[in-house]
Length: 158
Image (tube, rainbow, N blue to C red; front, side, top):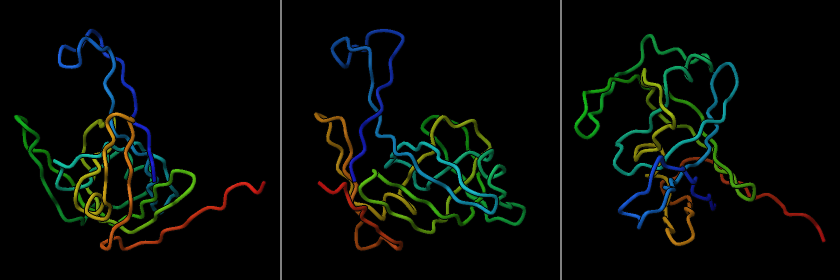
């Protein structure tokens, strides 16, 4: 599957990018399923994240009960410890040509996340990922650890 990087305009020139005014992020729209339906939520591929983390507000909208959920915590670089609750959900990603769907134990943190953190456990561990900087895209292929279903969609008939 191929996903284009998301261009993010900046307030000013970025010295490390030769004065460019745009940064690019490997964002993958991920459908999350819960008892009350599903929602599409953008996630940033993050190899520095141990777990895959979504905002707590998403769990509430999807009807995911976290009252007896196992707890986890993370400490962002230079930041305070962030607690989160784990739950098993179904995740789905697709580039329109291929779709992957699987069960995953993800965290829900009480933070206003712009993007989910698509971390190692239950996401990056299941895919071989190639960041193609010059093309500003990410190439994702399920690997032998992928526990779900992989579907290919037929293209238009000539």
